[in-house]
Amino acid sequence: MELELRQETVRGWETVCRTSLEQEETGEMIVPDACPDIWQVLDGEARLLLQRKEPQDGRGELAGLLKTTILYQPEGEEGVRAMEVTLPFSASPELKGLTRRSVLHVVPRVLSVDIHLLNPRKVLVRVGYCLEIEGFSPQTRSLAAGVEGAQDKGIQQKTGLLRSFQTVYVQEKNFTYQDAVVLPAGRPDAAELLRTRAQCTCTEARVIGSKLVFKGEAFLQLLCRGEDGSLFTGDFHLPYSQIMDAGEDSEEGLCHMDLLFTDVKCTTAGEDRRTFQVELALQAQAVLRREVTVSVLTDLYSTTHDLQPEGDTCPVQRLLGQGEGQETARETVETGGIPGNLLDVQVRLGRAGQSQEGEDCILTQEVELVILYDTPEGVAAGHRRASVQHRLAGQTGCTFTAELLREPTAAPVGEGVEVSFPLAFHWMALERQETPVIGRVMLGEKREETERLPSVTLRAVRPGEDLWSVAKAYLTTDQEILDASGLTTEEIFPGQMLLIPHKSH
Image (cartoon, rainbow, N blue to C red):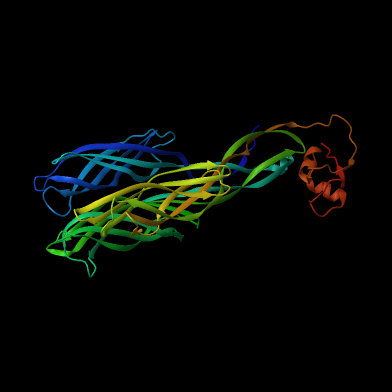
């Protein structure tokens, strides 16, 4: 007969897939009739806008746009011009374990932008990009916490606490940010907006009641051309604060927030050449983790009946560590001559990876440095690719993200420009284990006494034994051993003499 077990229900989310998808999109672009011919391409920068991500059974459906801004020097003219190329992209990666009830979190990253001039009126655009994909599915587990009516069958039970650092909340929220920004004093009027850069960071995320409150700022940089053909930038920090539902049983935990753009628009405000209307469309992807503790049945026996417990396993996660480390990098971009005025300096984050070096984990973030500067012949560009590493001592693996803490600084050095920039590495290490638990228990026949035993046994405690294991071996109870031995505490030690009474069946 199967015994009825009292159940503890644990609800949460399980990571069913995690992968990195790299792709490349290529397209040709004919220079619009209103634009002059291209003499030299200076730079190409792409923005990935993820506009659709849908979980399906065993796969994901992703789609969006790669908007690439090309800066170039026109043929026969001074100054810099810009044009935009839009490349659509889509992907249907196989994601084992994913269902339509799952939630997909995606972190997009542009890895490379190559612009090849085919002729003065045509360019070839190639954009490499990466999609970091993680799929979450809701999970409900019932764990045996005890036997119903245990005393009627002489059943002794032992329980323990099962602790798991698990995902308790996965949510998304789409929101928009609209504002008008004005060029700071000292900047000339903008004859043309050449390029818009936008980044968004989350500086704080915490649970208050049943709500998750998160805030941060969007950083906006406009590259403009003045009436005299000169280039200048305008930097703006736009704070935001948002609230999303965190469920009825919310508690404070470790919250990870990813923000991705679904659209970026920046246009001049009518005839005003100093004011721009900004509209940013974003999606916030939140994952809240915390330690969950539940009482489970770990062992049992009966003083009167035979029992056949059947084991099971329950996946648990341990938080091995988490934190933030910072690295300040200095790299020199060669210019082939003494550079003039620096017009723009950028640090673009590319591919991320990690490796093992002895007992340490090495986190690596690839970067591309881009500078625009004046020369006697006009505006020129310099590029350099480099890697920034952060060492985690005594760590064997983790998940991490890298973030540019503030805008880079740059200064001419010889025939080049030294660029200095700080990176923050946010990391978390989890270990997954399968913990044995009791799944079901079958009650056998009532035990019959087959031989005559003494009413009490005197013996010494052996190394590694506790009161539970002694009582189980002699099919008696903890309390009866304590009473017979005149003890008031369940703590026993090797060599201690115990009086063990025998149960009569």
